[in-house]
Length: 121
Image (cartoon, rainbow, N blue to C red):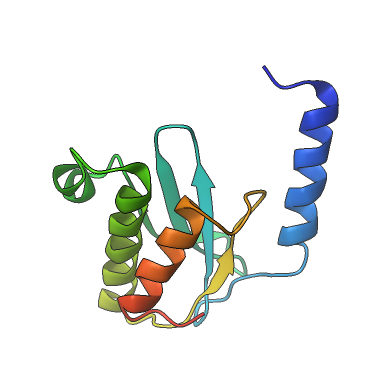
């Protein structure tokens, strides 16, 4: 379990990153959260406090494709899936919110797959 100091540092980092960005209906915030096994992403309209689309490694569409893949490859599939869902509802521009996670590894793989699938950020 994380110590109190570690939790404070994480919280401060998350506030610093999230304090600089916000999402609108035309350009929602693409929020990423990862655990040891899974990765989750949401497109959020902060003006109305609504979630427009979600995807994760637990979604049925993604779970079938990633059964025997590495975690970074699975994150790429989730990035493609969220891009497809957002483009289908007419959104092609987003603001990327990495949260408290560094932009490398799985977070970077998700972002680049979403970019390659047609999202602009």
